[in-house]
Image (cartoon, rainbow, N blue to C red; front, top):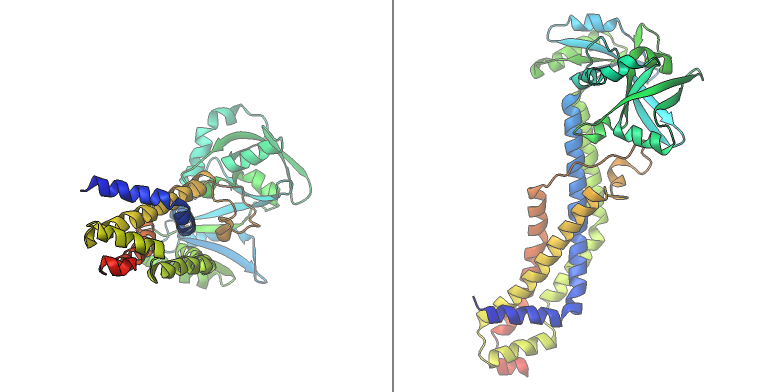
Length: 392
């Protein structure tokens, strides 16, 4: 390897730094936008994948006038007798709007003496049992996002809930919990079921919905049809339906963002076209001088490969690094709203860091080789011409 040739190439880049600066800026920005949007989508898919894994196979909701209403809890006993069903559990849960912070908390009622539809919720009462047993007042457990918002509004160890009847329910914070997916638990409050019923005014014989466990995936559709036959007034939602809905949303919003990136792509490929259409007079004269002093065609091409490779690789890795910082350190402000909505009513959550090699490879192959070829081809066309003709 000719080190002097490399040294000359680097010095040539430095001499034309401001000329290359625009290329580096546009290149880095395009890579940053591409990698950022796909990283956000991948992280959210990872979050939702963890959430979906914990969901029951079927959720049974009672409908009235096209809207969900409370369902008689006794229906769970009949659903549990259907062949293929391992468990049918009534749930008491709902959303509580905290107006001061303009967010919704997810309230889940859990009987400490019974198993939850999620094992982790039952374990939370066990983990916090030493403190709970010493409390003389009603209590609740909260996700980290809820606790952060409460601290912000000076609710340190207790919180005043307003029931649907307008009464005040004063509860003590007995513990905080986190999970692998902050999206799943960040806005969750768990309290004894009797308190959740009081908060939402749900009678003891009713429930918000019924979750149904079906261990054999081949039997899910059959069980769903049997439940629908038993209770025509119910809507049965499968885990696969939720998964499909989220995938459709992500595919649509990713496509929408890519459509918005069209102007950036046009700017990049206009720059590429300008490169491919020929070299400047100064660059042609420089190649002519190189040929006159004894440079070979392959030496000229290596020099241009070195220059374009350095510019493209530096721009690519610069865009990727800034993208990861923006997404996983700054938590993708503004850009994340493209997926979750600017008016969402959930506490802020931290995206799971995910490095997708396929996305990076696709972004690399779609941009870097195009730029390198656009630089090499006009240089080759000039280098094969006689030096005196080029200099004229």
